[in-house]
Length: 221
Image (cartoon, rainbow, N blue to C red; front, side):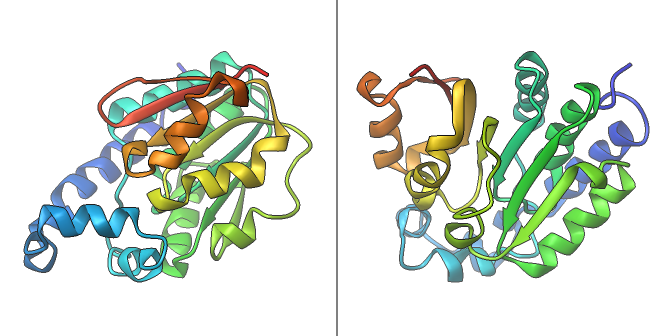
């Protein structure tokens, strides 16, 4: 058994994913009324992201169950000890990554989230999972919280916050990514400049769409 597949983490994740499925923002008439075109515009906007995601503060917006397992597997396979996460939300992806750190023998996970209520919920969930000691929560805009005090090397980077900022967040941590570091970007199609950057081998990456939702990237140079 691994930390991910044993109690208390496994039943906790089952409950949190079930709760997220039952409380999807598209079940809210306010969000359901937003046209697909407007949704795309908001997700790609660098001007409106704070307001847009503040409206979603009561929703978990997690990675999929399979993406969560992928995060755990990649962090284990790379023997990760240092992980950075952009977009904590309720901490479901954080639980997967911290579980990998525990099973790797320890380490540190820095996670950033600008919604205070989400930070509180994520901290409670990581406490319930017995993993909070591995996590440093940074509250505020990640353009500021991830601009300083990063580890010398980063093994895994998860991008799952405001999609429009993926290229900007990568720029903040890029110099710390070791050769072989893994980047998982959820819904990266909403940040074309990020995809352009990681798809150009001259920038030191090898990247491909791993699923309809996840872009998987390796630092190669």
